[in-house]
Each structure stands twice: as structure tokens, then as C-alpha cells.
Image 1 (cartoon, rainbow, N blue to C red):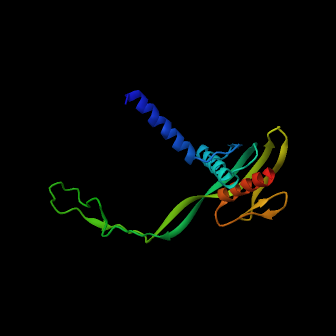
Image 2 (image 1 turned 135 degrees about the vertical axis):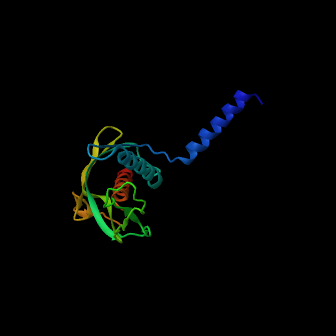
Image 3 (image 1 turned 90 degrees about the vertical axis):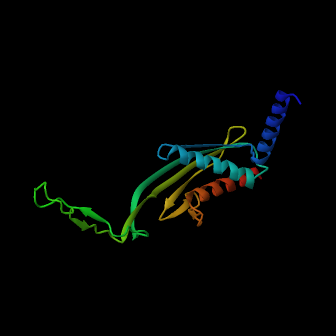
Length: 184
């Protein structure tokens, strides 16, 4: 077989199989944020598109616009250190200034603690403003989700939508449920 034709067939097959495994949806998702990292915004976008495609395969064409506002703080958590070096010591300067002295350099033990402090980022404030627009350009749903005392809350119904899955999962599942409701 001709090399360019074989390469074209291989590329076409790869594209066909690649597209077949990627879920598609007529729902456009736009995620923006002034406070979250670009990576976080991309992850929320990608997970939202994937979840909507999987959970609402027959969704009507619409656009979901999401604006994220996030505040974080560094949290220090003390804990036990799992590995400690054994018999560490450090050299101390000699008391005498005699350069002819061949005595071994004195050392003292290094006192390591069995405790260590780990640091992590904790989300202290999380707000999702969303608007869903139908194919004709009309706003069909608009609301916000807020983090309230550790729970994600829908501000229009004041219902807690928190699960053990986390903020992003709760947000994505909520948006997919709104698309499902609006598609019927």
C-alpha cells in the first residue's frame, strides 16, 4: 500500500476511534474566574462537559456560563513524622585555635522532633454564578451556589447540595441536573 494512503487511513481511524470515545454534547460550557488558577478553571470546564455529555446525552442545545470565585488560605496541620534519620550529628567549631591539633572535630547530636507540620490550601470561600442560555439566546436559568458553613448551598432554594464527593463534583453534578431539567 502506498505510504501516504496508509498514513491517511491510520490517521482517519485514530480520529474516528478518538471521537467515538470522547463524549459529545450540544451544550457549550464557558468557565471563567478572576481568583482560581487556569488549571482549576480548565478542570471544572472539562469535567462539566464530560458529565453533561454522559448524564444528559439528549440535551437540547444551550450554553452554560459559569463564573467561579474562590478564596483559599494555607492551613498547617501537625502530625507524626513517618521517617526520621538515625544518629544525625553536626560538627561544632573547635575551642582551640591550634592548627597543629589533629584531634577529631567535636560533634553534637541534632535533635529532631517526631512531629512535622504539613501545609495545604483550604478553600475558605467558594461561589459559583451560573447562567444557562437556550439556543435562541434567552436566559432560561440563572443562580448561584455558595459555600456556607462547609456546605454548598443553592441560593434560590437554600438547599444544601453537598455530598462527600467535594465542591467541584457537587458543582458539576448540580449543573448537569439543571441541564437535564431544562432539556425535558
